[in-house]
Every structure is written in structure tokens, then in C-alpha cells.
Image (tube, rainbow, N blue to C red; front, side, top):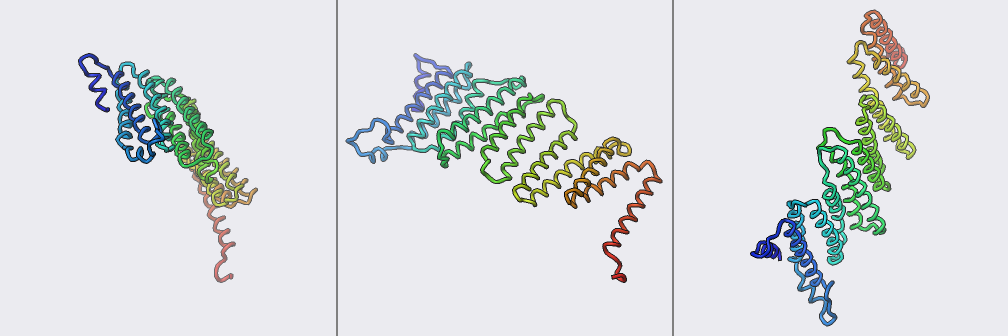
Amino acid sequence: LLIAPLAIGGGGLIHWGAAGYAGGYVLVMVACIAARAIARGKLLLSVKVPIASYYTAASQAYVSGYVVAGLLSIGLSLTDAHSQLVTSLVLGTIAGAVILVAKIERNNQLLAVLPVILQGLLFSALRPNIDQSTMIGVTAIVSTLAAVAAYFITQLLSPTHDEATQQTLMVSLMTAYIGPALVVNQVHPSMLLPVSLFVAGLLTYRHYSAAQQAYKELSLGVCIAAGLWLLYLAGYTNRHIHTHLIALCLAGFAYWRSVLGDSKSSQGYVQALFLVVTVPLALQSMAAESGGTYGLLLIAEQVGFMVVGVSFGQRFLLRWGLWTALAAILFQLKGLGWAFLSLLAVIIIGVAIYRLQKHPPDNQK
């Protein structure tokens, strides 16, 4: 069967193009599926013949035949001058064939390939030009929304959520990130790309809504990254805007963990929050003469951290804010030698007195 299109299309009377050969292999695929259906007792079944005889006659050659024929039809359709139409028709036919084969083989796990075929069908129909960022953005949105549709349709049609359904849902989720991945060939990405990533993040959160807390936070992290990416493309490129927004999200995660009673993870998020806010701001202030405006902003933030630490009894916040603020003040005064040395001496004396009060000498114990 696999050589039949070559024999017919290359004969003396008929000369097929790529589209003709693609159509020929689609017919071969259908013929192999029909043969497999007969062998499995799904087609032309006679009550006079035992089912077991059909299973005995069943052959894996039919399976190899329709798989190879389907792949050949796709490859040949891509070489046709009108491949946008031909390939789309071939992929649509193969999608229907997959549904039929799943019933014949009694294996719903085969349906997991449908979201991938759907993506191929969309890209074949749209054929975005990589030099047109707007078209790439539209394609990304359509691709992600198609994956979302495939995900929820799978849930509606298979409410039991068996293993085959879970595989199809996971494949649908993975295909949701095909659209945002189009950024790899873009010099000036469209603002629709982060929107598609945000939608993919929401779908990921929906998928893991009943899973461990870490999976839900990671899913929301994808949405946060999409929002920051959108701000960057909109012209908000100052790193401190992004770091402070990340800090707000970390604060939200810390509160979430605290509500769940996970104080250790909550404290970890709090510490990450202050690292994200303090380190970039400190590096920026060190690049300026005597700290500059960023140095003053750093001091103000650390004083705010100290107030929060005192108000809520958080010793970590108090210590972090205290020592960072002192270091920033010293850096601000580095141009004034006498002020720098005076403040440094006061700090050293204060630390010494504090340590002596907390840990008196041995002869005073």
C-alpha cells in the first residue's frame, strides 16, 4: 500500500504533484485504518465467525502503515506550492483519523496527540511571518487560546479524569507555551506575547489548583513574569520598578504561607523580599557619588523596615534595616572625612557597650 501512490502518481498517464502524493498517502492511511478495524472486529463483523479469529489475523503492520502514511502525507504537503491549504486539510483529516483510531485500538491515550495536531493546524493556516511582530503576537494569542480550549473541552468530555484524560490535559497545558515561545525569533517582540504567557500561567494555575502549594506559587510566578515582561515592553525599564513589584509579590506569597501555617516558608519569602529590594538599590547607590538619590531612598526604605520589624516583633527586619541603614549612611558621608569617622566611632562604641551589657566580663559574673 505504501508504494501504491508512487506507482500511480509516477505512471505514464498520471503525474501527481506534491499535493497529489499527499492525498494519495491520506487514502493509504484510511485504507490501513480500515484494515486494522476489520482485523480488530470493529468493521464488517460477521456473527458467524468468532471474534478470536479476527484478533488472530490482526497485524501490527496496519498500525505501522497508517502511522507512516500519515507522516508522509504531512511531509509531502509541506512541499506543495499551496501548502498552506493542503497541509491544513491533511492535518484536519489526521485529527479525525486519530479519534477513529483511538476507538479502534481501544486506547484513549492516543487522543493526547490531538492538542499538538491542533497547534500544527493553526500554524499551517496562519503561517505567520517572523518579520511581522504584530502577526507573531496574534498567532501567539490564538495558539494559547486554542490550547486553553483543548484543555477545557477535554475536561468536559472526560469528567472522570482517568490516566488518558490526564495525559491529554498535560499535553494541552504544554502546548499553551508554544505561543510565548515565539519570542525566540523576535528582535522587537509584540506586547501580545506576554499576554499569551499570562494566559498560559493562569491555565497552569488552574491545572495545579489542587496540587501542592509550591506548584500554585510557581504558576502564579509565570503570571508575574508575564506582567513584568509587559511592563518592560511598554517602556518601564527601570530595574527598581521591577524589583519592587517582585517584592510585593513575595510579600503576598509570605502572607499566603503564613495563613496556611507554614511559618518557615513565610520567613523565607520575607528574607527573599528584602534581598530583592535592598541589593539592587545598594548597588545602584554605590555607583553614584556618595550614594546620591538612590542612597537616600535606600536609607528611607531600611528605616521603614525597622519600623515594621519593631511593630510586628520581627527581629530579622529590625537587624536587617539597622545594619543596612548604617552602612548606607556611612557611604553617604564618605566625602566628609570627619563626619564619617565620628559616626563610625559612635557605632563602634555603641556596639561595644551593647555587647558588654549583654555579655559582661568573667570577673563581673
